[in-house]
Amino acid sequence: MDKTELEYAFERIEHMEKLFDETRLIFNNNPSCVSEPSFQKKISLLTQYLESGTWLRDYGLDEKGLLPAELKRGILSEDGLYNFICDVENASKRKTDILYRFFEKDEILFAVLWIIIYVIGFSTADSISENIGIPKLITSIFGFILSAVIVLFAKKNRLLEYFGLCKTETKPKDFLFFIPLAIVSTASIWGGFSFDVAPLAAFFGVISMCFVGFIEEIIFRGMLFSGMAKNGIKSAIIVSSLTFGFGHIINLLMGAPVFETMLQLIYASAAGFCYTAIFYRGKSIIPCIISHAVINSLSIFGAEVGAEGQIIISAVQTVINLGYGIWVLKKCR
Image (cartoon, rainbow, N blue to C red; front, side, top):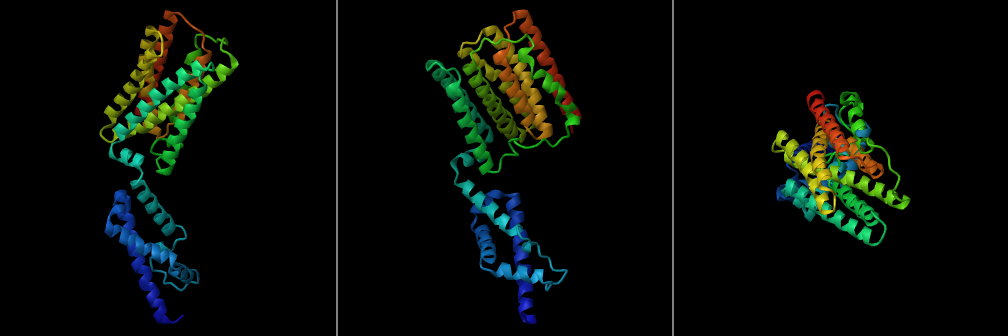
C-alpha cells in the first residue's frame, strides 16, 4: 500500500470518527432524533462505511500497526459502531410501536392503563376460575400471560432496568440485609397456619399470588413511581404508596369483609411506602417482588384470627414497614 492510499485512509477514519462521535452525542441526548432526515443521512453514511468492506480494510490497517498512534480510532472498535447502529435501528422500530409511543407520551397514564387491565383481568379470571370449579386456574394463566407481555415489552424497548428488573445498586448490608423486609413478609402466618385448602386450589393459589406480586410491583413501582418521579420524588413516593394501598379496596367488590379490607388499606399503604423506598434507593424491585409474592402466597395458609388479633398484626406490619422505609430513605444513599 503506497503512502497516498494510507493518507486517504487516515482522512476517511478521521471523518468517520467525527461523524460517529457527533451522532452518538445527538442520539444519547435525544433518542427521538432517529426520525430526523439529517440524522438518518449521517447514520446511512456510517452504515455504508461498516457494510461496504471499507471499515474492514481500515480495521486491518490498524491491526497491522500502519495507523499513527495519535489517530483517534474509536470507530474501529469491533463492536462499537455495529452496536450503535443496532441501537439506532431499535429506536426507529420503537417509534412505530403503538404501545411504546403511548408509554413515551405519558408514562403515568400508561401505568394507569396497566392497573385497569390488571384489576379487570384478574377479577374476571377469578370469577371464571370459580365457575369452572378450579379456583385461581384461569387467574394463574392470565397472570402468566400479562407478566410475559410486560417483560417482553420492557426487554424489547430496553426498559428492564428502568422498571427495576435488575440487581440492586446498593449492598445488602446497607439495607440491613433486608431482615425487616423478610420479617414483615411472613405477616400472613403470624396468627398461625391453616391447611384447609385443597392441594390443587393451594397450588394455583400460590402461582396466582406470585404473579400478583410481580405484576403489582412492576405497575406501581416500575411504571407509576418511575413516571411520577420525574416530576418530584416526594409526591411520587406518596402517590405510589397510597395508590397501591387504596387499590386493595377492589377486594370489597370481590366479597372481602369490610373490616379486614379497611385494615388492609392501612398496612398495604405502609408496605407500598416501604417497597417504593427500596426501589428508589436500590433501583431494583426484585426484593419487593420476592417479599410481595411471599406474603401473598402465605396468606393462603394463614389461620383466621379475631378482630383484636387482626388489629395487632396490622399495626405491627404498619410500624415495621414505615420504620424500615424511613430507614432506607435516610441511610441508603
